[in-house]
Image (cartoon, rainbow, N blue to C red):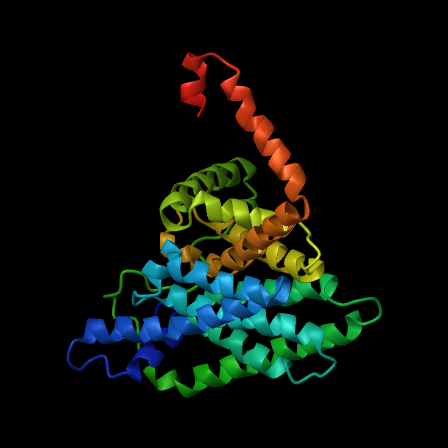
Length: 319
C-alpha cells in the first residue's frame, strides 16, 4: 500500500492469500482476473473491425507471451491493464450510443486502473483522443460531456476508496525498497530543462523496448498491428482504429520519456491494443488478397519464376 499499488493488496485479500499455498492462490487470482482483459480484447477487436477480428484478437491475446507470463504473476501491472482494457471498451461504447449511462462503467474502470497502479491515469488518453476522433460531426459536445462526467465520477470513486481504506495505509517503517508512488521519474526536459539528458533517456528506453519486443510480443504481431492501423479495408472502422492506435502510442511515449530501462511488466497495457490491431490487420490483408486473388497468383508466379531463371548457385540460397 505504501508503493501506490492499492487495489492489488485489497483485491488479493479477498482470496485469503495468507492461507495455504499463498503464492499459488495469489497467482491464480490474478490469472482469473486476466479473463477480463481477454474479454475486453475480444470486444475491442469487434469494435474496430468485426466479430471475426474479435475472436482472433482473443486467440492472439491468449498466446501472446507478454500476457501469458505476466497475467499469472502477482503484479499490479496486469491488474491495471485489465481495468484499463475495460476503460477502452467503454470509451468505444460511449461513442456508439446516445445515452450517458456508459459514463458509469467507464468511470469505475478508470478508477480501478488508477488504484491498481498510478500509471493507470494515462488510460485517460483513450477518452481524450476519442473526443477528437470518435464522434461524427455535431456530436463532439455530447461525447465530451459523457467523458468529462466519467472522469469526474472516477475521481470521486477513487477518493472514496482511498478514504475507506485509510486505516490500512500503514506508515513508513523504512523496510520497503521503494516507498513512493507515481511514475519512474520526471522527464528531464520538463523538470531539468535538459534536452541532452532527455535524449539520453529516450535512447536508453528505446533500446530497452526493442530488446523486449522479440521475447514478449514478437515482431510479427507488431507488423500486423501496424497493418491493422494503416490498412483500411471495407470492414475496418477508421475512427475507432485511429483512436486505439494514437492513445496507445501516447501511453508508450510516457514510458519512453520517463524511464531509462523499461521492466517487461510495464508493457502489460500493450497486450490488448496490439492484439486487437493485429487481428484487424491480418483480416484486412486476407480481404485484400481475396479481392485480388488472380493478381496475387500472377505476382506469386512471377516471383517464383525469377529465381529459377538464375543460376543454380544463386537459386538455392534464394529459395
